[in-house]
Image 1 (spheres, one colour):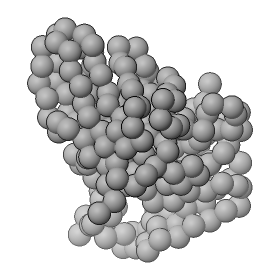
Image 2 (tube, rainbow over the protein chains, first blue to last red; image 1 turned 90 degrees about the horizontal axis):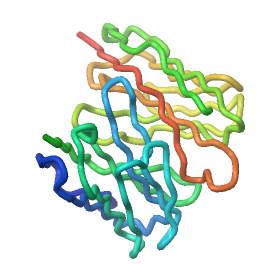
Image 3 (tube, rainbow over the protein chains, first blue to last red; image 1 turned 90 degrees about the vertical axis):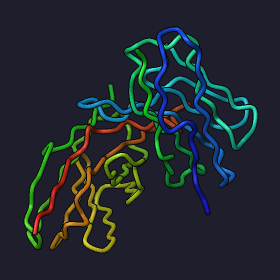
Image 4 (cartoon, rainbow over the protein chains, first blue to last red; image 1 turned 180 degrees about the horizontal axis):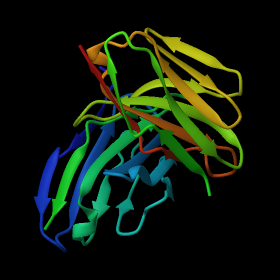
Length: 111
Length: 113
């Protein structure tokens, strides 16, 4: 089944404790992105990648890092999480010019 | 700055009561406009892509249309299972923007019996 998977689905952590949210797709898509979704603000793009080793900032990249060492994986790294990073996070992937597939989401709470 | 505005924020319809959702946009050059459906606690699900003014696409009870300034998602004779949040997003032309999507905040649709 074609899908985007994210782990973990739920995470509660404390300020400053480094964490990684994994994202994997099995569709051989070149493009992958990370979004955060907050009430009243909608989906905002954090980072995106056009292929292996090619990444760029979206609208809200501060406090986040990404890497794209393999085509299928695009982890999101929070080196020192803060409470304002509490949000619902989505990973997505697509082919060039194709429709975008979203993962199931990761709900992150930073206390 | 690219902007996407959706209206209304929320819409309550009775089953069978047709209506339209609006997505207005201000961008430097439109590459594509996308409609998604999002159910609570789930990731958005792709519905349509529109590329040029005058284009229309249909899927079951949904029909999306595009003008130079806005897009409409028409829902004909909705059913309760159409209840969801509908999101609009735009992709703009330009170097390095191939993966950048700007989303609206969505219209929350509730269809009652």
